[in-house]
Amino acid sequence: MTAQIRALERTLGRPLFERLPRGMAPTPAAEELAGRVAAPLDALDELDLDDTTAAPERAVHLGGPAELMSVLALPALAPVVAGGLRLRVTLGLADDLLTALAGGTLDLVVSTVRPRRGAALAAEALCDEEFVLVGAPGWDLDRLGTAPLVAYAENLPILRRYWRVVFGTRLTRAPALVVPDLRGVLAAVVAGAGVTVLPRYLCTAELTGGLLVPLLEPELPPINTLFLVSRAGRLHPAAVTVRDHLLRQGRSW
Image 1 (cartoon, rainbow, N blue to C red):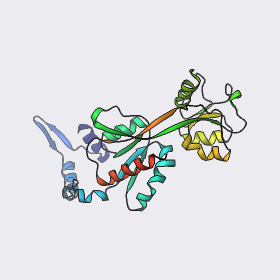
Image 2: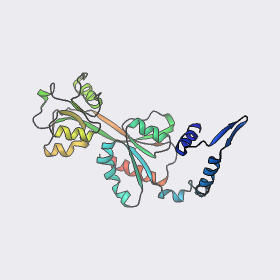
Image 3: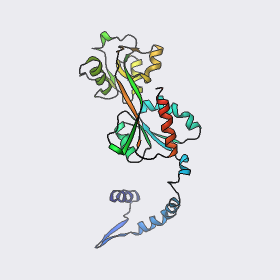
Image 4: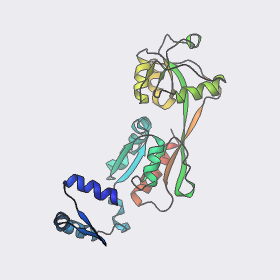
């Protein structure tokens, strides 16, 4: 509360309270501000935010990784949006999105990790993403040891996992190119920058069209389970619609 009052005072450029021997008293600026916001606050009080009859009109706040949301989730949700559902999307990393979900600013999160928040969050398996080692035509497995590595993070999280699971070794090389978006990684590799590991859903068209080639097809490729996460308890009807639709669509991903 103190931090919020200080932030409001900085915005207004005037103090809102003065300290007294016993407590605090509002300044004239605070009295003026209270008068200006009284009517909007009264109008807000008249809204019944728990009224389930109005719930379908509420926007659903959905979070998830940029690549999966753009390629799979948003196209899958297009029919329900066209049917009148209101959707607001936040893109980001799993930990940040799960924190926002727990804090109440999101209704649902597509997460690349299972949440570790006990009963506070409920997670349902959405789909498995399969990882594939790819490069543009001309790159092959024989040149893998010297091929430039393209990654979305400096610590090579996807590549390191692939090396560990498939090759049984620790990847210690530094990336040649880092792009904090797997779609950028894909574009760079298609253009011949080097090799990388991508979720198969992201590069299916490029593999089918010959713009990329799989450098290896292991019998058991690494996979990662994605989860659809909500706060434990009842979701409002519009969020239930999004959750159920994504879970149905996820079976085909």
